[in-house]
Image (tube, rainbow, N blue to C red):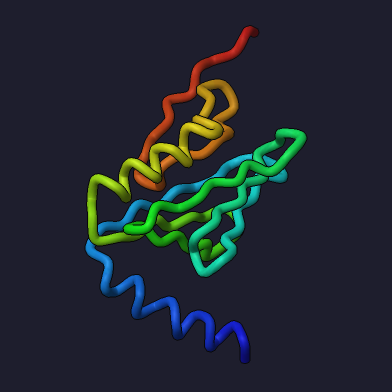
Length: 114
């Protein structure tokens, strides 16, 4: 019942926001989690430590799945700036396609040595 209440509270907050940016995390063991009601974002990206990002005041962050992050807000510039900061923690690589990428982004993979 707790998860139903949590989803019911977070859905109206998303509907009020005008701008969205969805990020997809691709890679074995790569995960994201949000704490402090969308104020802190923790990323596990294969480093020896978790990457901790503080969310700006005009932006809210939600994790629907461990590999999907949604940045929302009423200021387009701040939402896109924060989502670019999240993406820069582990940009997608062109050989394996692992990393953090936008949902609508297409990564053209390169051919390796054969």
